[in-house]
Image (cartoon, rainbow, N blue to C red; front, side, top):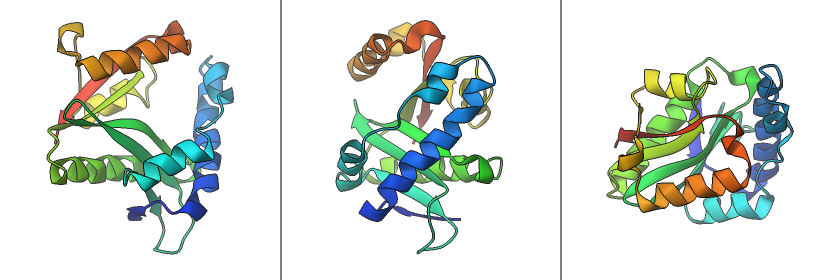
Length: 169
């Protein structure tokens, strides 16, 4: 897989990847997550223009099979979304995107990667813990992470337990 910056042409494909990657949530009793609409094209384009949207594709010209979008939050690069199409799952693509984002964080002088995720979904918090992320306790949350968690609560995501996670860059 080749990791490269997202292009404007990629953005509709990212929405398709997000929809496909959400389907497994239906099978674990979280149909609301499976049915959640992906980020709008203008939102994805804002990440792209900021230089914080990357895709994994078979080659330089190939269609993406996975993507990651991030934003700086309190001296860390916060992973807003990482999604892998089920056809490319379990091949290390998500891990490679996270490693790439970690390298970018380091290059930008940021100290860590952070993310928020579902605590009990096997391909969420347990997966991230296996690849070196740790759950932050309430006292460790930065103001930016608290703001993100508040927003997620407004969206109703706290219906299922959520956690903030951290990995040094």
